[in-house]
Image 1 (cartoon, one colour):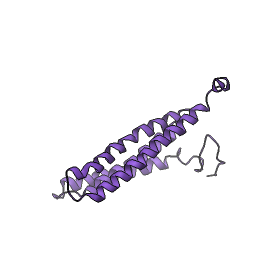
Image 2: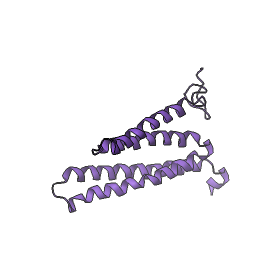
Image 3: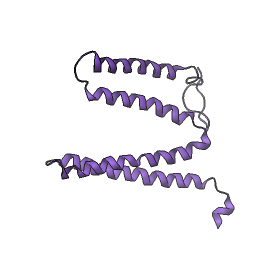
Image 4: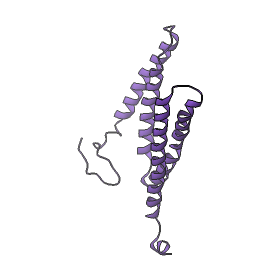
Length: 149
C-alpha cells in the first residue's frame, strides 16, 4: 500500500484501505461478537446485564455508522451534512435542561445540576458556532455579484 498526498478528494489513509474491506470486516467482526454476547448475557445467564455493556454497544456501533456516513458523502454535500449535524446536536440541550432541572425532583443533586449547566453551555456554543461556520461555508458558493448587493 502506498500513502497518498492529501487533497480535497482523499484522506491520509493508505490507498485502497477502505476499498479492500478492512473496515467493513472489522465492523462486522465487532458487531458479530458484541450482539450475541449481549443477547447471551441478557437471556442465558439469568442475571441482569450491566448497563455499561449496552452503552458500549451503542457507542461502538455509532462509531462505525458515523464513519460510513461522513466518508460516504460526496464533497458537495458535506456542508449540508454538517448543518444537519449541528441541528441534531440540539438534542443535547434537551438532556442538559433535564439535568439542570433535576434539583426540582431530587434533593442534593448539585453535581448533576452543575454538569447539566456545563453541557448546556457547551452544546449552545457547538450549535451556534456550527451554524456560523456553515453560513460562512455557504457564502463561499455565492457569486461575487450577489455578495456586493
